[in-house]
Image (cartoon, rainbow, N blue to C red; front, side):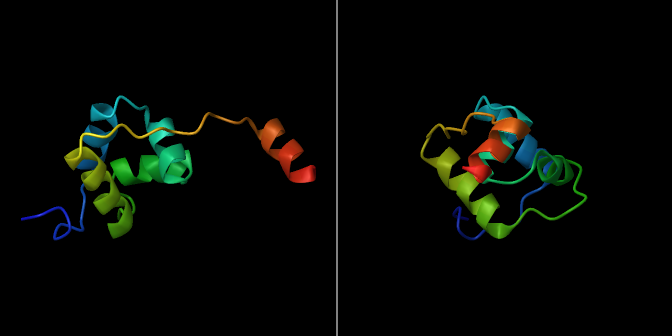
Length: 84
């Protein structure tokens, strides 16, 4: 089965993926442009991981690429950026 056919991803598979990438859960969340809370909910399977995220993660792993998570921006920095 190829990476496109598998659209569902378990919380364990999500956790293994960010650990394999060498990312923290928070960094993985920034890379996927989701909140840290959403990433935690993916891991505990409180919500379903969207097919687009599952396919992206599998594709990046398949090609042995390293995702580059954007740096953490604190709340003050985000607000300052929005105001300017």
